[in-house]
Image (cartoon, rainbow, N blue to C red; front, side, top):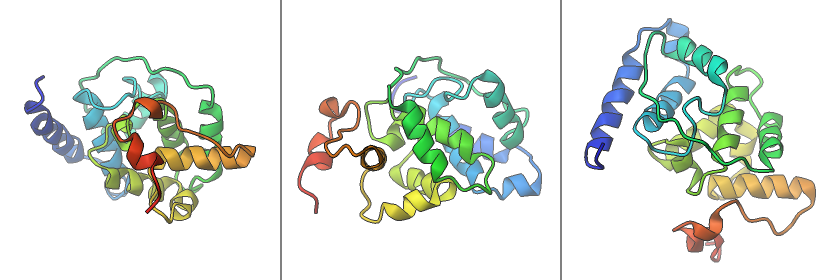
Length: 190
């Protein structure tokens, strides 16, 4: 698919996902539009997540069946490089998850997997903008979202939190050296 068609196709997929009939309790779940955006992004080849979002096929299918029953998505198979700190990032997210949200555990796995990407976390997740990521963090990891009071870039923030727990004080996020926004993240704070 060429680049000019991608936003249009993404929007069509997003609308179709959200039009999928579900029970009222699921339709009102703030997670649903966020997951729809993430899935639409993955379906058009955005982000770095594998086709199952890093959840494994069975869990991915259960997630789809719950939020978008019967919907069949085009999927882009890809491998994500594993990162040695995946378990630590996942645990950081799990420690701060909203325990009333059963999907927060799954979202922790998805976010930790996306941290292996080379772009901003919202881009690696395949979301359409940073505001969606902020909403995803507020919904699933409210104490982390509240702690990011300076509006630091999310991947940088997560790595700083992880490193602070480990007593590491010089802690770059993965792939930052090749990121086009390196100066924005690692320049002087404003």
